[in-house]
Image 1 (cartoon, rainbow, N blue to C red):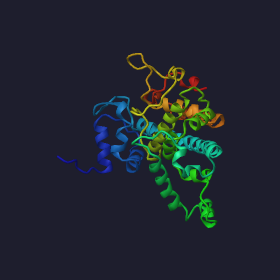
Image 2: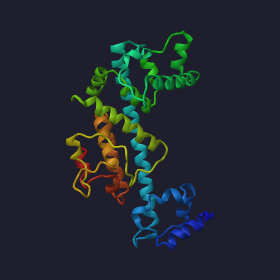
Image 3: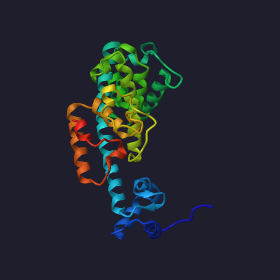
Length: 295
């Protein structure tokens, strides 16, 4: 039987009938109006047993978890944007140094490819973006006006982080290692770690960009953390490092962000948790002393 439409007041009554404490009905109705009932249900799972709320659970608890998650997404989106700018600049510099400003036009300057990621697929997609952006991006208009091909350091500005991730994955191995080393990944498999990190960050960025829930979310896509980095993770029920929640991605961000950007993010995260102290960070995969482990 299909679900029946419920007014905002009826939705709130359902929550109250299930045991949720509502101190300010006007504020709760306003919140439900702009954040629909179905959406907020994911933020109340830890406050109830099936459909019955625990005695201490309140609508304010739901709002605190929701608002914390919203502000955290914004912070994560911002620092990933900084990492994206950095990786584009570093990649374009070293690529142009090795293959020249227009080296991306030659397929032979790229190596390993797969059915999922090909040179043609990446370049053609970005080419479409460049053409669609030319009429409103001055730096692209310039090269069109002088009838010259766009150099890599300008061309890469039209790449999304996902595009950069794919381009890096099919790049010449020596170039991959050079770029990875810029982020402190100097081991023989450093380029593989960076490739995984970029893929994961693009995935996380898209979740944040579309308002996806991070709270109590289990990720199938996981960062490839080093042995030492895994020691920062909490343990699962089997005593193994639990890399299925957000904290693994935070370690990923810590590894790739510039020191000043990371310190700003870390301090803002500590302040955010102080603002919403009710929020249990374990539902993000954080251990009890997470603020010390992120120093």
